[in-house]
Length: 150
Image (cartoon, rainbow, N blue to C red; front, side, top):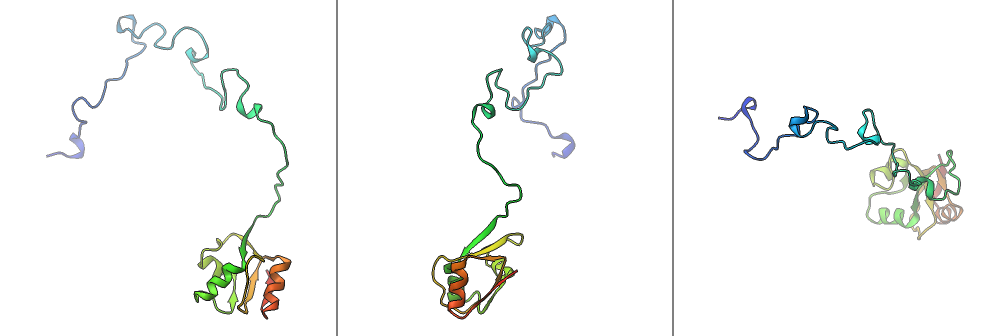
């Protein structure tokens, strides 16, 4: 009967490790399998991330350009045709809030949402999100809906 205290690996499945630095007679004494000289033979050696043996590293060879604005706000864009598809399938009726969009997996709860003017909207909807494009706002109001900015 096997228990946790008497489990062993199958015969021949585990190799014995090299016993290094145990004298010349072991065959792994002297330099202890590290070769002669160089940084890797010394104790305390650790290679820097991206080090390529003295060759100019990739992150310094590749040119850098452009600018990344740390204050940029990313919006999750949702086209009008997606909203119309939700109306057609009966998932939304007359009001659309951020919670409705999250429930239908068009946005996540921490997203900033922007309604885009792609597609056609036939249903009268009262939409409450963070932003609207001018064409989306016009299309929503053209069918008698309301575009409310959070």
